[in-house]
Length: 170
Image 1 (cartoon, rainbow, N blue to C red):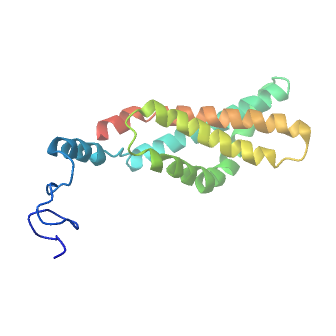
Image 2: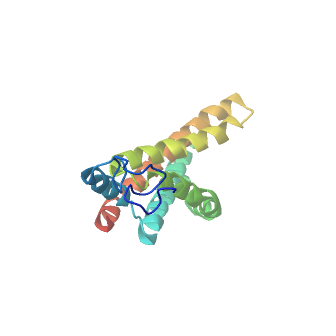
């Protein structure tokens, strides 16, 4: 006799074993664990696209302002904005959106959205940092570090911008 379907409960137990149907766990423990396992952070398509769009626009505006600072602060830096939007859009769509989904997926059981904001900042900053390390020129490393920091801040602000949208769904 294998013990499956007899009075000792599921699994292989001898007759008269002191385990219940749930094993050695109390019903209160099982109910609490079921409630914890049932929670999943649900973003929804509008929240994902809004967070991605806010991050993208904020990053492009920041790059444009940085170009203005580098070019001695004249008004010509705003000419760069359409180019950053146009050339940055495919990269943000192909790299940024999957990266955001990849960062969000393991966090779906974490209730504290502040940790989500921090994870987005660290994840995006790390990816930009690694890409910046591929630079061969020492002068470009500082630029890559500044871009990585700005990308991390943009991602954190983008994720923070959808906290209310996500909180309504959960």
